[in-house]
Length: 300
Length: 224
Image 1 (spheres, rainbow over the protein chains, first blue to last red):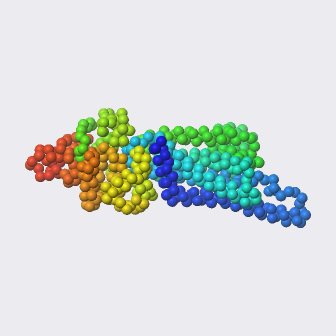
Image 2 (spheres, rainbow over the protein chains, first blue to last red; image 1 turned 30 degrees about the vertical axis):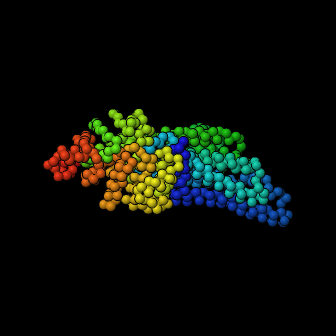
Image 3 (cartoon, each protein chain N blue to C red; image 1 turned 180 degrees about the vertical axis):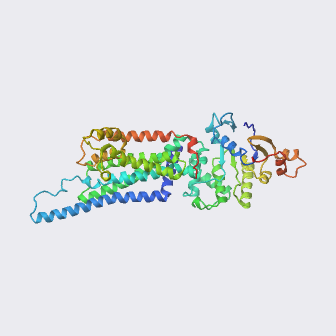
């Protein structure tokens, strides 16, 4: 337990002192804040046009924003988590395990009464705490911004939905953080350790949905999932195989339902179960790393 | 190749040998960083194969070219290693050790700013924080200037005399061995070709002027 807590605390401290990681955190928080600002600008612009049109007697229809869920303004955050959040998590994950191999501090650590699983679990907990703190901060920013936009504090239901979205985002980011940890542990070079998870991320985010749903690459930058039924046998078949592995699309689906995206119907259970399964599998793989691998040096 | 060696408690033992003789591998095996393919070793009553955790609780280790977390301060680095060694509230102990090493006033400086000599003192500090019975030093004088070498030598001798710490030191600096060690072993291509107290070793070769002459008399040569 001491090793786990010490490693977790150490990881948080190292992340807070690393310039690159802090920069990425700042970018992520800026983007989440921007998401609400964009929503607010859209709302203001559309409402202003609507009021002008209403004054001119050109419409009797209600303001299109009146019926919209307040969570509409947070919807762009889904894609920021997939694009920036996942990359941030990869960088943090790679740094967490590469740090000891790069500076050969692993020998100082492993010459102490330290259990390998506790050490790695502690690092993972530290990463989890940092990512949770970032998401908590971004959720508070979103909650505050949306409350300002709609002119009243968000009620319990949308607040809970925002919290569910944050939890799903945490799960997705942790999967990519674990991927980063894994390549940080096994790569022989620092560049490979960073490059491999980026390639995997781009394959999962762009290639798998494309070959499984004939989705256009640009469509994949939308917060709405591209895993649609095409009616084409070949795509349906490939989609059934690749769909479960397209975890960013699974995340988009679950997050979209949590944020009351009216284009999504059905239950998010399958997507949530898949995210959970990936999280557990990746955790198990990382924790199974041997002592020898922990102290292996880099070929640089 | 096998190695049979007994270092009594309270000794300052110097393991000598050419580059590639197996000194670092020996230390890595004794500190449990490597697992032996066969055989065993006992450190302070704990077997490296059957009770590696017990060995790790008994030892302090300073690797060659020791590195730390450069973005963290001296205090943060030492707290981390102290806690990993099981010290729950390590600050008082850290201050005692830094005072013993005459290395005060750097607590909140980042280690990335430290010179090689300063890092080596931090290396000693992290190795003795938990008051280990046995201290392993791998080429501790490597890369140090003459002043750093002298300071380190005095520290090793004080740790041994004042706290009764057994020191196991790898080196190929024969002059340092003469000034620091009470017993020596000489490794040649993985085999122990000599093992005795320093006094006995010098007495056994009266015709030789120095340990260096004895070393070459024993035909210890680097692989060509």
